[in-house]
Amino acid sequence: MVAQRTCSGELQRQRGSEAEDLAAAYLASRGLALLARNVRCKAGELDLVCRDGDVLVVVEVRQRSRRDFGGALASVTWHKQRKIIRATRYVLQTTPQWRDQRVRFDVIGVQGLPGRAHEVAWVQDAFRAT
Image (cartoon, one colour):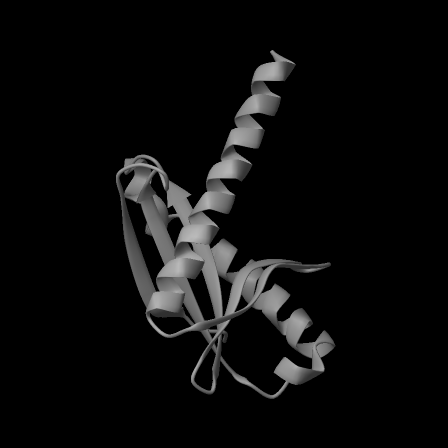
């Protein structure tokens, strides 16, 4: 039973990584420059940090194989948004080159499996820090 959980957890991490690869390529094809990936700090983790012109873009990548409960985009709840905002504030305080940048929060939803049939939805300015 434990082996199944480990394999399942590893499979989820692999799918998440593949979804982030797909999202990074998708954003690059639309002119955004990838600055960092999987930025971890004591306040949480930022999936992708990009530059869109003079704006620093924090991108949350969500992948769902099924549309149950609203699918990938609906999984970015207000609670998840608060965690992302908190982590972003911490990273901005500790990364001098990003400190004074204007910030936008985007969400990329990958519906389906990255290596198979999938749809990518990009929501720019999906939420704001208040």
